[in-house]
Image (cartoon, rainbow, N blue to C red; front, side, top):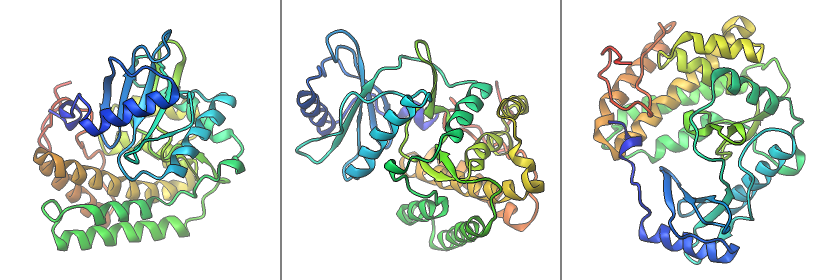
Length: 327
């Protein structure tokens, strides 16, 4: 069973207190709150938030930067005003006495992830927007973010020698990223695409969610995520064909594949870090982390032989490396 299925379905007392205080500050009703997601931050639905309709609250982990959350709120309004569907905020971020930040947004309803073609259309619309100077979005720097996450990993999941090697791999990938001559002008990128961060809303249609990693950088970075689901996770290649046809560009062939080689190295390192982070909370993820690390080592030694058949965080059952899929 995946960590996603084992994540807690109830708020801790501190989260409940933060939600109640923030709801009172914004005039919303927190009664009957239902936890939708409890990962780094908690996301809950308030079924009677306004007395007429529901709303969704996001309770941030302690220490989250207020200016960054405020930027996400402004970015959501900017996207909606420019035709890119996302949940519209209902208020400014609330700061509780515990220092926890809480945001409230309209409820897009329950829905699964978007299709490959729908994701392509969403990203095409996002990437076509002029970079908004008023949002002061950060410049995308994936290696810097990964290095900080590696430093935070406990020794029980990453021995000193492996940490040194992984740190070196990410540093080298970051140098490639910085030196690469990207073929397009910088665009607004989502920066953290996964199945949790898109939704086919019953009422609003395809939508992008979770704008925490919104940044300015090569649009190819977002496109590489979809190609990587095929190459790293052995996803159905027809999905990528559908995506690249709808978007009108194949990231794996840009600059004769040079751009994707840089991006795939970063995606692989990110996948290793994600698995190690999962293993800090769930030891069942350690074999997957070891498998992913072995794949990254082979990638650094020569041309990678895709697909790697990684387990997805959303998979209902953890397969052993090389074990056949049941779906």
